[in-house]
Every structure is written in structure tokens, then in C-alpha cells.
Image (tube, rainbow over all chains, first blue to last red; front, side, top):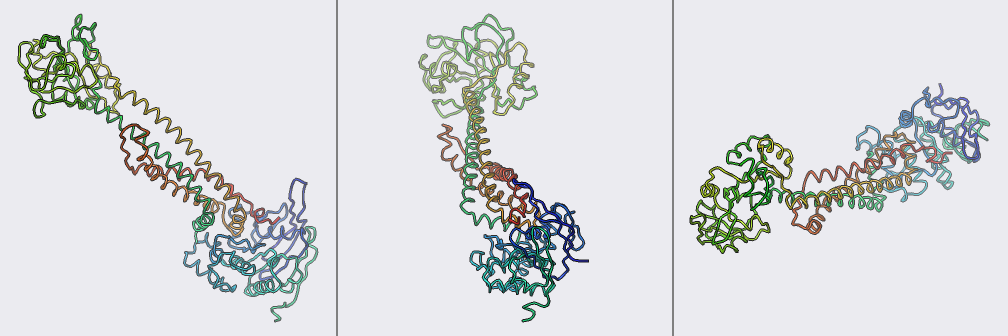
Length: 234
Length: 388
């Protein structure tokens, strides 16, 4: 059984200018431990697919199973619980909460857990050290560089050890070197068993992933698998 | 980290807005506390005055025309239907609300020639009468004590007209009496124009043992059921007229009641405005934090978690506003109360009022943030994070 199974998913947005078909019958399987890229031009529907796969955006039709669970059969609150347990997000522009320190941002998912404060702090510190930000954990987001903010966002996504992380254009606003550092970090996490699904429009990012699916006009155009990648080679 | 840390962290970031919201709450609570304290003090002042000055029920024979009167009560008329007497006092003590009859002051009225002039004699039991007329200021002949059977006290007008002064002897109905004291002007004809003497003595002098002309009773404490007491006395004493006196304090009481109603209306308005301020502020806060809330929802916060964050902010600010508002309101009441109430009102710190102010402010905060919290909880993370 695949970790994620999407079958014939359609997503239609109704707006003032009529209906927009963002997804048109997308079917996709993602295996546990995969590092998958979703490629496509702007407006192709890749971010919508990410939100649907991330249990945030119910499809208009079709089904999606994660770990055998029909996510959209759950009510809104249970789906929130599901996201908390199964999914980590690295958003575009990182979306760190500006009035919380790096450490507090990482602790956010733990705020609704049963971990005592001390343990939360330890967990968050460990993860921040893992992404190379142990010494800057008490800084506010605006005191960190773009790459550092991205690392905090990654730390927040993995702090409660979800099996899947979705990343939406994680290198979009970073310079080439910083972007590559982030992808190397993703690759390292993937090697530890984390399933990573990354939306990107940058073909250079494909050097780090195991597979890429190409989306155009809301449909899956093709899927390409790759052999051992850059960091592994290095 | 707990949800509270998130709420407080946000307040720390939005210091100016938080301060303005607290300020709004402080003004609201302080106004209400101030108004309430002043109104309450005024009511207490009235109650004290009524208790102090109130000989508030008058029992008189239900009879006709007047020749000499005491507070509108006939001394000599065409013949009473029922003559009051000392046994009626015992009857009065059998009514249901007998405990409200704090002082019973029986009186016998008679006229007499004193120093060649006609005068009103009022026979009283001095012990009860002096208790009843606490506001009498008496110029005593000697050390202050309850006058005896051979002594009289003269009202200021009576003393002037009849030429009486403290310590002087005066002949009344063939008997010598000592003027134990003269009452300073009270502004009341009944008190100023009469000569007060021992009730038993006057009954002997007028040859009417046990007879009474009227009975005054201090029953009207502020919270006593005066209408009920009056009705009970009337039922027990047929042939008499039992009437609750409209003391001068009554009109002031009416004014205070009107002020209380005004204060209540203003307080309601202030609470409404305070609630709206909190609501607008929280709505703006939610709008400003659309993306943050989107992140919260995306990483697994339930709607109830988001609502709790909003509530925590509102409760925290309202709590602070309530506490500061209470103290400011009390201080304002102490400073301006006497000016507003035009009397020496005493404002006292009250724990109950403090709890009500802080609790009320918190409740307003919670109620006012219900909609913003609901709005926040319904934010679609997909839209909030611009996934579309």
C-alpha cells in the first residue's frame, strides 16, 4: 500500500469569473520514504494539488488516502488532528510567526500536544540544532536570513516527527547556494525515512529528488524517476 | 509552549493596540464603578438619614376638625371616634413586622396657659422621644440627662414667645416645672412651637390617665416594608388613621433613585461601547493575523484552539482593564463623589464590587470576542496562506 494514494481528483473553484478547473482528474501514488518533486509552470495547479494532498483543501471529486485513511471523510477537527500527526508544512515565504522566536516557532506544533514545556523545549532545540540553527534559537524571524528562516520552517515541520513533509517552493526566494543547502538538508531528512513532497518550478532542484511529476493545466503530464542524486553521489 | 504563550506573544507585539484596548476597558469599568459607588453612597446616605430622622409612621384617631394641631393632628375636635391609650402600644407590638418598630413614642397633646399665653403641651416619654429626635440640638440647663417628671423642654419658638430659658421655673396648670432645656430651631412648627413634658405628668394634669393623642413610631428603616407595616398597624388599631410620613428625605430619595436609573442606563451604554471596542479590536487583530491563523490551522490547530487563543487575548486584556478600572473608578468616586452627590458621602472599598467589575469586564471581553473568535476559527488555511 502506498503512503499517499490520489484517485481521479478534480478541484473546481467557483469565482466571479465563472469556474476554474485547477485539477482535472489527477491520480498519483507516493511511496513511503520518497522525495518527490511536483513541477509545473505558474498556475498549473501544483500548489492546489499540494494543498489537497496536505489535507487542507477538499477536492471537488475524487479520493485521497494517506496511510489508508480517507482524509476527507474526516470532519474538520479530526482532519486538523490528522494534519498534526501526519503532516509537516514548509510554506512559501516560510510563514514564521513574527512575534515568536525561532525556538517558539518550532515549538508551535507542540503547543497543542501533551508534551510538558520542558520536553517541548528540548525537542525544539534538538531539531533546531539538526538544521544548524542551535545558536540562533532565541532570535525573532526578522533577525534571521532567508535561508535561516527556511531552516526554522523546516524544523517546525518536523519537530513532532510527522511521516510526511510538504514543501511549497522552499527555495523560491533563496539564492542558489542557500537553496542547495536547503535541498541537501531535505535530502538528509529523507534519508532518515521522511517522505518529502516538494512543489517547485526550478528544474535544477530535480537533482535532489528521487522522482518528479509534471503538472500542466491541472493534469498530470508525466512522471520521471531518477537514480542516485547529487548529495548521495557527493 | 501553550496557547497562552501565543496569545500573550501577540499582545506583546501589538503593544499599542493592546494598551488602547485596555484603556477603553479601563475607562468603561472606571465609569461604571465610579457611578455605582457614588449612587450606592448616596443611597446609603439617604438610608441613614431616613433611619436617623424618620419617625415615619404616625397613628392618630380618625377624627375631624382642628383647633390646635401637632403635625396636622387634632388636639381638640368635635369628638374622637376612638381615643388612643397606652394599651394600644402593646397591641402595636403584636403585628407581624413588629421587629421593624424600633422606637414607639406615644404623645398626649393639650393646651395650657403659660405666662399668660396659650401654649401647646406635648406629653412624651423623654427616653424614647430623644431617641426618636436625634437631630434635636438642645441647650441644657445642666448636665445632659433625660428630663424627669418635674421638668420640661421648650421648642425654640415656644421658649421665645413664652419667655422661657434653660434652668428657669415655670408654672403649668398650677404646678411648678423646671425648664431643663430649650431646643434649638429645627425648622419644624411641631417641634419649635411646643413645650414637651413627661407623658405621665401631663396625663395627670389633664385628668386623663392612659390617654394618648397620637403615637409616633420609627419604623421606616430604608429597607423596611413600610406599606405592609402601615397596613398591619391599621388592621390592629381600628378607628385610627395610620399614615406613613413623607419625610423631607423622601424627595431626595426620589432624586437618588432617578440618578440610580440614569447611572444604570449610562453603565449599560458604557458596557455596550466597551464590548464594541473589544469586538472591533479583536476583529482587526484576527484580520491582521490571517496568515498566522492559517499556519496554526495548517499545522493541526483545531478551531477550538484558535478560538482559545483569541479568547485568551480578550480575557487577559479585559482582566487588566477591569482591575485598573476598578481602582481608578473608586479613586474617582472618592475624589468627585462628594461634588456630584452634594453631600458628604462615604465611598468604601468593596470586594464584591471589585469582583463584579473584574468579572463583568472579563465577561464583556469574552462575549465581545465570541464573533471574532468564531471568525478566526473559520479561516480557511488554504485561502489564508494563498495556496490557491
